[in-house]
Image (cartoon, rainbow, N blue to C red; front, side, top):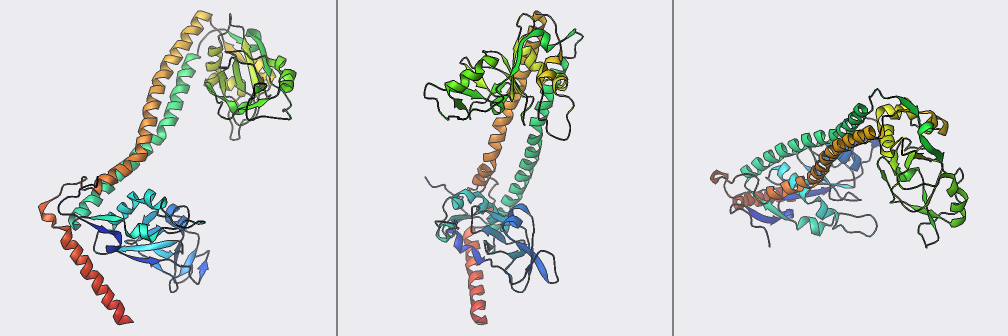
Length: 423
């Protein structure tokens, strides 16, 4: 069902309220500013604000800050920008509104980016389809209401920007909070022991890669776990590979991973990531992963896992962080690392305190993710309301958009007459 507009609005084709001029490549383009030159506005300049070249004024098609630039060619076709002055490149077109609030038109085109971008023409490089663009139904509101709408939109989008900046800080805050929880848990006066004294096995996987790896298991293959599969508190099995029985049998006895064993990344970009083994089936390990099989009568695997993740434990196993990426932890260092070791009962209490606190952090993180997802769709929701006439109040003093349309048509006639006289 078509959205009903306010009584004093009128719906017109976009081509009725804008003029159009395609950009072009200037005769003179230089990397440095020169006399009588202006910024050359290609797609990067429009979208990123990065001006890389300058063009001569005389041979250029110029855009003013109250005109709208629309990307005409390429993957970003339909993307619009406003408030820039310079020479427009050949992949950009200039839209200039007739007697309407420029920002109102700009925001309307913003709301239609996905529509324009997914309805392009051209089999190779996509282009804005003029038939689609010019026949978009434009909701023409009275000029005073347009101005109130744009003012309200500017305010709302400014608030959204502030919220986004605040949201960007939350992941780091949550990470620091988790680290504080772990740090407090292991700042104890318990006697320290070496991991070698309380573990049955500390061993890395195979030091040679299999000649063949398989994307699927035909029933005769075995999982092959490497550092890319180990994350903090979980095993990432989205990119899993398999090895044949011959390779598996040649290395399996080296580690014999069992459900609940500690798996620690000791090489590569993910060095220090640690989790418990959640797989009940046998699998092969690469040397980038260290398997730690604790003596469960002395050391609970989860207690060790959280210790390694804590600032105290991380420093003990890996050392001070530096400006360069950590690449490797040797087995010797892991075995000699010390851990504060209370009785099993106290270890269980510490694990429960950590996990109870983490569950609260996880809840905040879930709410954050939901809000972040909502923030993606909120701008379009706001724009949708704006161009249905639901964002600001309609006032009797605003007049009627039909009268504004008459003024636009009159202005276009005058411009056409002037153009014919020049010819």
